[in-house]
Image (cartoon, rainbow, N blue to C red; front, side, top):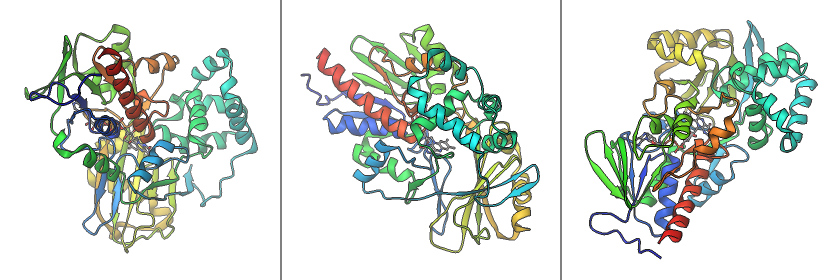
Length: 437
Ligand SMILES: Cc1cc2nc3c(=O)[nH]c(=O)nc-3n(C[C@H](O)[C@H](O)[C@H](O)COP(=O)(O)OP(=O)(O)OC[C@H]3O[C@@H](n4cnc5c(N)ncnc54)[C@H](O)[C@@H]3O)c2cc1C
């Protein structure tokens, strides 16, 4: 076995790019296994797409990853390990669709819709190659209409599910939606629980265990060079860090804009270039009073503010936060608006239910993930038919460089996938070092 004690120039250490959940979890496991690690993070904070914001009076809400799904077992186990309790965050959906209000929980999906989904989910592991190809080449909306699901149900389900996929369902392959039902559970919407105190607590718990002295923020890596048994990462401002292996736990846009020496093989470079992340703009409306009353309040509309839900469910105090979750083109329109225009949009969307809400608005915060410099979006949308081919290329090592991040995982697009990939890459490195030492 190689000795992993760090020498003076840190040459035995493993460099990890990205202090999102994937990079931090990999660092935590590697450190626990006795490997010296150094995490380099481009932003001035850890957490990546997990970003809990706090108000002056102690409320918190999420601008990034929020819900812990029913089947997110790795994430649930990790929260348990770090004594981070989960709390209920289920919502009761009501709609404004084509100007008609459908009250809380009043939409009963047609039996045809439920049966269609259930029958495909049951057969999913045994689908023939022809069926898989068909489902990859048809979008969710056309699939439902072709299956004979009533239009009204297809449209309402589209509004709901486009908040999960982040783009209009006419761009999302039916295969991906069915896959999500298979791995994510049978709820239409995946909203079940969240981390009490905020998702960022998980990132902070990991960072504490890695040791904050082993994490450097504001260190955007622009080039990675492998020579012999060393790998060097250079920041935009010219700092150089060296290690024996490197984990790139960064989104695909960050991989494809970085200089790699030796270069990535062409088909892998093409895969990193190609993956599109959905556009989501979150707008948080901090209010002095919870005028919506229902703790589980969620309104889904066909306006650009799209989904508006109560984000401070179960938190004490008079005030509360509503979040608008705009997707696709709507997300871009919301992002390009002035703050006053965004407030107008939200007031108009809620007017029919609550009248004039303006007197209750204390502040507004917006984050447009489509404009994020490192992801260019919120989470992946595999538009192309041969998604399996490109997906299988992401986790492959490239010499001394290993890849992690939710996009490399089975449960891609979720915090669970980030954790899954951190575990996989740590094991991969430990195995590789054992073989080659
Ligand atoms: C709006 C939104 C809502 C979401 N909702 C949910 C949800 O409800 N439930 C759920 O489970 N998941 C949700 N997710 C997804 C979840 O947040 C992500 O899947 C997960 O956090 C990704 O973790 P990661 O470590 O793979 O990537 P990231 O969190 O993106 O971490 C990568 C890190 O690498 C850094 N980086 C990038 N380039 C460089 C570079 N060149 N040099 C150094 N560092 C670099 C980035 O700054 C970032 O910190 C949501 C995401 C968003 C954006």
